[in-house]
Length: 190
Image (cartoon, rainbow, N blue to C red):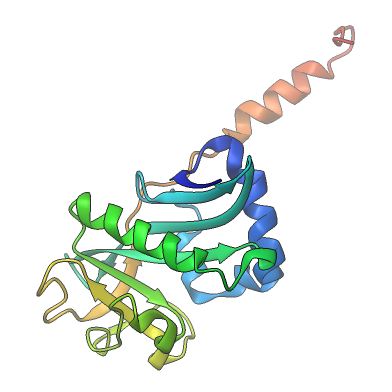
């Protein structure tokens, strides 16, 4: 049985393995990664596709601005296990992600992708002509879909990350704890 659900912290390792198998290390060099790195995905919009306890698909959306003072979401990456590609599971994930984003009141979604594939979900380059991304990309692959009519009317400027920062460990506390654990005379747990 297949189920789409919100991603849990326990899904992270499986999600990363799936993304590695689909995209490899090249995914970290993409311009859209600059907008995702160090940020949490938008609340309730990090989804996984699960089959019999195995993560076989993933999609995440991220808070950005489509130019100054114009909130939007950035979609990606979206991936489906290569053993299951061609079964419409990516489309199922895409439709669910867009429906949830709209239900949560979001106004527009941006992505970099294959125009013929994403056109069936309502994406086009019509609203992105006066926007740009912080790095190299193919202009014709920079697509958008308005979830509310007119959400991107007049949008112009740099697309910037606005999402909540990732939780990061306190390096000073980690180093102090490590130093304390290795202090002479300190017993270590077996």
